[in-house]
Length: 107
Image (tube, rainbow, N blue to C red; front, side, top):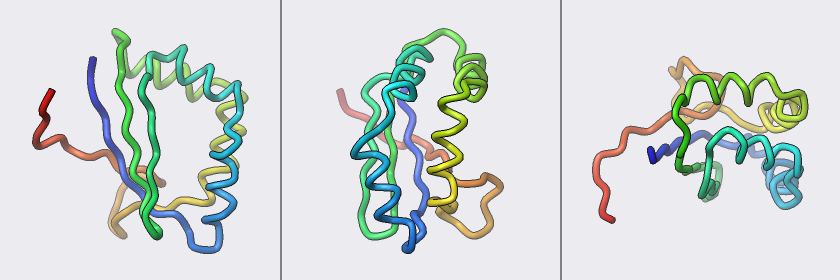
């Protein structure tokens, strides 16, 4: 099992839209996430900061990420959520979520 954490910002004018989408997350998106080996997925918010955490239990993370990206329902979900997000730092080379490096963990 591998832990992943990520951070981005939510556009202030899109905050409520983003939160509403996640209050009623699509079953097809949740099914794809599960099929791609992701468990224990949480997103937290404080002001304009979104923090995500999940655990990956699969054998090929890159292949599972490609499979998720190819899913039409997930593509539609991302088309709705992506405009609500911006990278955490202005100089980021990613469109929204920025991965975080784990520096400490206690089981």
